[in-house]
View (cartoon, rainbow, N blue to C red):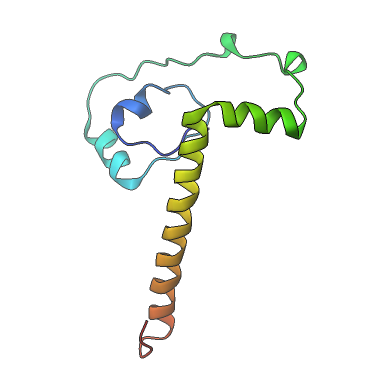
Length: 102
């Protein structure tokens, strides 16, 4: 599943992916576009799950830590999600209690 797209090109590069999480702004960009979308991801390249490498937690954490981009982007995403959660809670609270000061 793809998510956290920054532009239309990133979305189109995953044409054929089963599920994508796309912001309303990028959905509008896609809607305004013209032309044909070429499916880039196809079933025949699908990995065989029975041949997947088995990882215990220690090995998973080691491999994750070895991938700087994955580690940094994961941490960045968690921080952004947490900050957005706080903002959302304040918005909801102000709607439920319009007289209270935040």
